[in-house]
Image 1 (cartoon, helix red, strand yellow):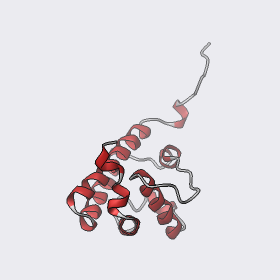
Image 2: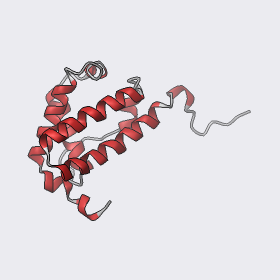
Image 3: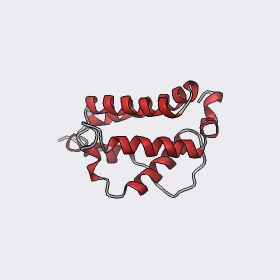
Length: 137
């Protein structure tokens, strides 16, 4: 990770990370395409707290909760498409631009784009097609 990005969490600050996450997930719930996959969330305050911690860690912060993050299993069962990832990234970009100055928004968005690429790759696989260490007769 480039030196200037190692302290992104400190430059942004926990309060602004929480504000971005709160705003983003408030908008998700009203979004024409993204609201549906997120309907399974039943405790929005806890979801936002978990994701605030996730982004804090992703931006270089130290763990302060015992959450375990498994991005693959959480997203594979949702039927994620490239179009949904595009919508997610566009909305995330808009929220970042509303809350942060350019360089900090860019640094955070770079992490979001990386996550988007990972989710796109995971979406190409079905659990039925993954048979680890299977021997073929």
